Length: 371
Ligand SMILES: NC(=O)c1ccc[n+]([C@@H]2O[C@H](COP(=O)([O-])OP(=O)(O)OC[C@H]3O[C@@H](n4cnc5c(N)ncnc54)[C@H](O)[C@@H]3O)[C@@H](O)[C@H]2O)c1
Image (cartoon, rainbow, N blue to C red; front, top):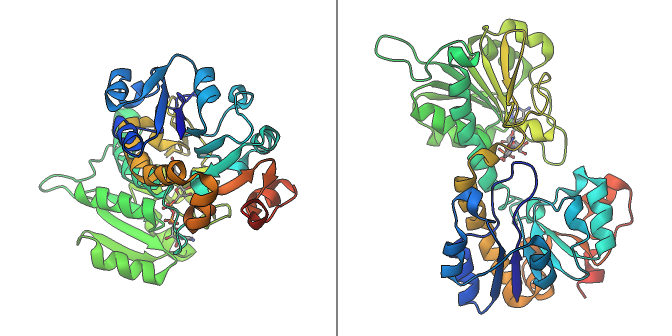
């Protein structure tokens, strides 16, 4: 198969969908790979490194879309890319169709095959192509939180780990899933006193077993949250209710109960946020202050560490991409339920229920396109 990797053109997106190691894997499997010039530079991969691995560099995005049977990307195509997409072309990338009606219509019109990273799903309902980015965001949440706790950054001037004779900071993590677990591990490693809250008792039991001694687990409910925020120096929002907006565990009136200079990092901001006063921010302007409380609400945190994020993402996507290339999308999806769940739009039809429901557009059962 002919694989094409365009350079990401979404604002501030420095990740790339394939590393030189990935190119080598495709070559080993007998495929041809075209990479747009400088596609990997933002993640630290030169054109020469791709060429060495066996790829051909093309000068323009148009040339990549023109030649490729499968486009592997990171972010959804943006408006200027729509016209480049060809009928029957396979696109393997994040789409998040349910958050863009325009993109949904555009892909229906182009009659492409859209296989979305975010809906590839394992039998245990986990989302293997979202996990790596949650891991990155969870770890980064503590790094960013520690930075904004510094006085010159607006925080209350407390060092997460304290020093001999001085108590460490208190870190409260709301939600003990992928993001929350990684955040708690990082905070604990830096010596902070960490509390994780979740509504799932089995999850709390698991965390109690695996976390170090400076991490406590507490059931999440309004009473416990209200008590915990009074003591916290750094609060991480990491709650997710699949397919729904995040619940506001911290409401506006609760800010007055916090210590001035407390830092809130709402990682869940991409699902509406679990802190009422959080609205999405960007890496250029990541924070704002309300009632002396610092809010960090960057919606694409992994974008700031493209090297790590690219490697983490491609480690997870490559095995699926190789299957798609080796078998073609139809056979690969028939033989692999996980990949099949990734199909969202096929030749002008919506085959993913959530997308048809989001925009009240006709739904076509997957069996009709995968005969
Ligand atoms: N901002 C970013 O750049 C970025 C990056 C990656 C992920 N995210 C977001 O981070 C959020 C968390 O992702 P995840 O992968 O950790 O999800 P996850 O499903 O692994 O974990 C969510 C956890 O929240 C818990 N939860 C649900 N309701 C709760 C409540 N009322 N109180 C406490 N806990 C509750 C669940 O039991 C679960 O353990 C998602 O919204 C995800 O989209 C954001």
